[in-house]
Length: 161
Length: 175
Image 1 (cartoon, rainbow over the protein chains, first blue to last red):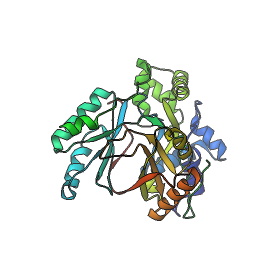
Image 2: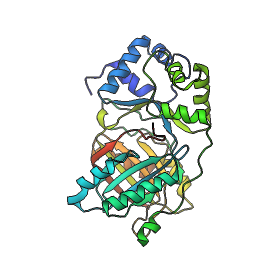
Image 3: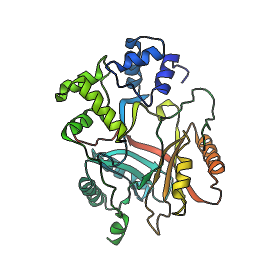
Image 4: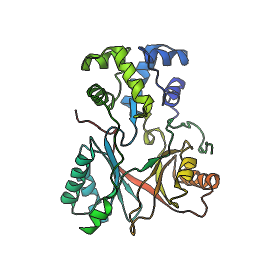
């Protein structure tokens, strides 16, 4: 983390929401950081190349334009790698994690509609031989303004309630 | 498989109405904006829209809350937030909205969703994703949340991730 420049830190932290909807959005960001448009563009490219930034763009509200769900499976420890690999092969799967629980495999699926989503869940059950617990979102309580990054100290218990 | 039927209720909420042009735009912006001086103009060129139309449509998707957040999407793990725990809570149905709203305001809570219980296997109905630099940091964030939202008597479980098999942005419309 020490290797990040001040500009990089600001680019990572300050523009996680509300990217300007103007013809030259990166120029607008540059003005806020007192730098040039090309510095912003090059910084974003670099941060993307080294994996700190996934993209500059939209986070869609769950289930607003497509169907998505969290799903979980309980699989034997010795099979988890091979089952995870099978699940990763579906383009509809965007997250897939092993977690410490009886339900040890947790993944998120997104498709354009519920019918497609169900077909994928059916196929995963068929291909792996284990039932999938289907946990679609019912209500979203999170106001997504991004994530305040702490580049220095160890604790980050910022919040309001 | 009885279990499977039980695991598949309820159905998802209805989707927002988007027109054909929105569909084309969503297909392009789901993987990110071009990193060039005029990104909206460039997107427009690909789908026969002007720069102004693209900007107006994204503004509409924002206002109608189809887009939740529009900006730089960072990867927490790569930025040193090595630990993440899906922390799940079993909250009385009549209190879940109030407590969910309380938890959803903290910036270290990156997701806060109500989801169905799957009894008897799964009693939890509120899901929060908590990030931290390490396990201790995540646990102290959870303690903080319990204190601030009055959750000391609420049954919960902390599911740390131990391996990431896949993480990328969702594909809502196949290319």
